[in-house]
Amino acid sequence: MPNKPLLPLLLATTIPFAAAAQDTTTTDAPTGWTGTGELGLALARGNARSESVNAKLAFAREDESWKHGFHVSTLRSKGEVTGDFDGDGVEEERYELSANRYEVGASSAYKFDPRNYVVGAARYENDDFSPYDYQAIASVGYGHKFIDSERTALSTEIGPGFRRARDAETGLVENGVVGRGLVDFKHQLTDNSAIYDTFLVEAGSDNTFVQNDIGIAVAMNEKFALKAGLQARYNSDVEPGTKKTDTLTTINLVYKIQ
Image (cartoon, rainbow, N blue to C red; front, top):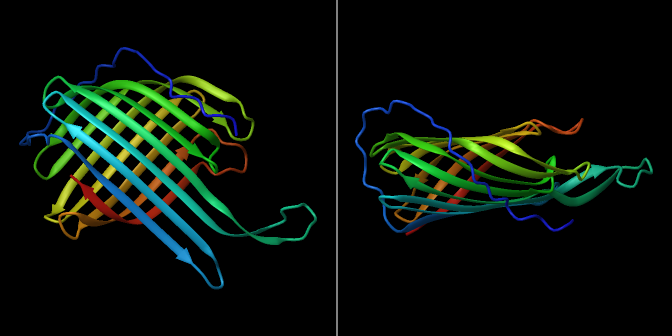
């Protein structure tokens, strides 16, 4: 595979976005870097053989003026597959990769006040089993915190961006402007459990990418938690015979970094 390009840089004006915020009690923003590390494993042996690993590392920092975030994630699976691999009409069984993906993302936001901010974000993904070998997006936008209480947080972001991607089937490189939208929700159900949902859309003339992550985390102590999640990923522009939507269900051990 050829070398992957660097993430493009984009300078553009932000899109104004107005909305009325709900009446809630604003909490003080944490200071210093905090983070989480996640790991999930699945192994099968016997009549069927497979192995899967998914991992994620995320860091964030927020003060009175700035909010920064960074994440990296990976998914890798192997399993037994059956098919006519050499075209001789005879089906064979092989132990091959069935998923191989990694993603890196970062964002920085400057806050005008506790609820409104301007944000720059970048995301790069490489996926051997996606309609695209890679997708790289850089964007700027406007963010607003609708709810920022002790138990519930709801924020949105919207703005223009630039996308560069390579089609896995044709090898053609696509470049174009996209519109990026993000909705981030979290609610503390009990003292040790929380539900979350993050919705991301990157819409352009070449392709519309949508990803939704929903799940629940249950803390076992101050450092460790168990998290069950469902991720759905959608690409609108795919080759005939390729599914537009992929889903991933995970149960991960989470370690809190402070």
